[in-house]
Amino acid sequence: MSLFGGLALNTGSYYGSGYTSVGGAYSGYTRVASSTNLNRVSRDIASGYSSDFDIINTYFKQGKTDKALAMYDSLFDDIKSSTSCYGYTLTDSQVETILNNAYASTTGSKLTTTIQNETTSPFWTGFVEGVPILGLFANGTSDAEAIAKLAGQNTDAKDKIAEGFGAVLSNAGSYAAIGAAFGHIPGAIAGGLIGAAVGIFKTIIK
Image 1 (cartoon, rainbow, N blue to C red):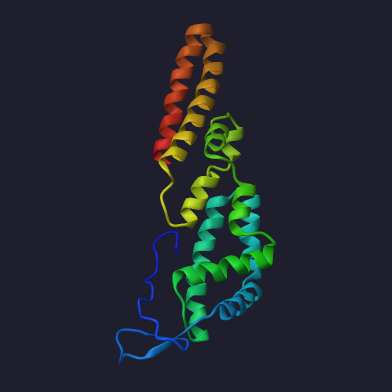
Image 2 (cartoon, one colour; image 1 turned 180 degrees about the horizontal axis):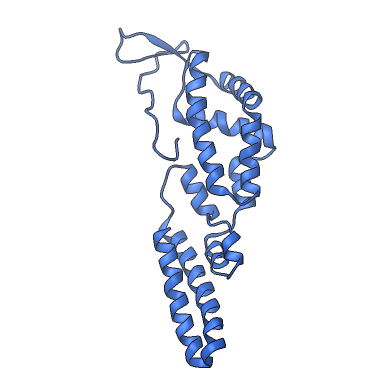
């Protein structure tokens, strides 16, 4: 499914012999792809879009998760359109299968496996973002957020809370250290409170 808005599914009824009705019994028939057909299309897609899959994989390894997911979403729409030339009626789920199989065939890793290997947990993502300097170069998308986007869903509340908690701890510690340098204990307390507020704010507006 598309990350930024799905495509309409075929809602015809299956009539056997590899055909399905579209728009009523007398509106014509289209072919339904079998698993063998889907595998063949996946091989074709892997060959035709190999450079795109390599770029997506590279984006993940560079910590540019949002760019990788945006490109994947764009590929989904392209492949949804290009597979129409095969004469099959494909649902979003089938296109997703084709795309995932083609990605795995090209890169040697399932997309979800790549996400899990190249991103961090919500807590650690939030924590690293709050570290001075290092946070500027951190991957701001956690594994939970990336997989949720891939599924076209919102990130679970517990994952958002975990990321927020990590951000609060990290920012509070960083600001407390800065405050201590200027005002000892009072400065550390003030800095910690400011840092915690910054961490919460960053998580909310994300």
